[in-house]
Image 1 (cartoon, one colour):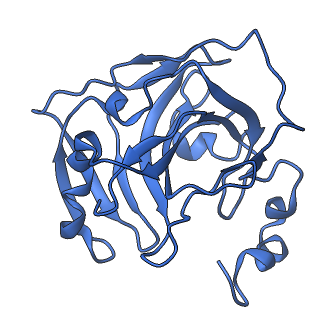
Image 2 (image 1 turned 60 degrees about the vertical axis):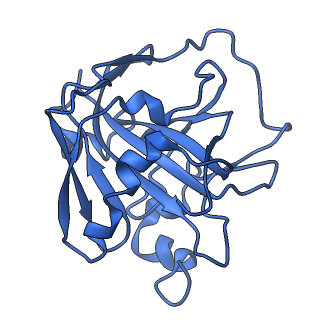
Length: 216
């Protein structure tokens, strides 16, 4: 994120990275406004049987897990089908891996569950650069007790240490990765957080963080 090809240089190559809808943002009281029209999200097909499998892969930047096309979310302007989830985390010395911040505070890590507008577009590639193309759920992670639900993914990380490695992860209820309070969240229209930074994302960032252990 630093150096000649770092974050500050992105707008030269990718104009959207310097745009007004650029994510991530800091949620602080001056920009927050209560909206009584927002509904709790409805999750359909999130409980995936263990006989089905997700593919976990290392793309060289992060670890990504491809999700079942039978998973989708409702109570947004459109129906959005799940595509993949991935994590943003810090290193051992700096446990501030979250992208979004709350009143300037970073969290240890952040999980993104990426969905695309399947009412209007055939797949995520077609939806990625459209203003109403994507919906991402963001879960802020902080250090606390061991989390058995997250371990269902983390235990496979040792098999994808290197770029292009892949492993199959048995299905489980992806909703276990979300906080208990799903009705409290920050909602805004923003962008992909990395190049090409398309302003195509309807963000839902859950207000309550989920705890994982330091070892995890």
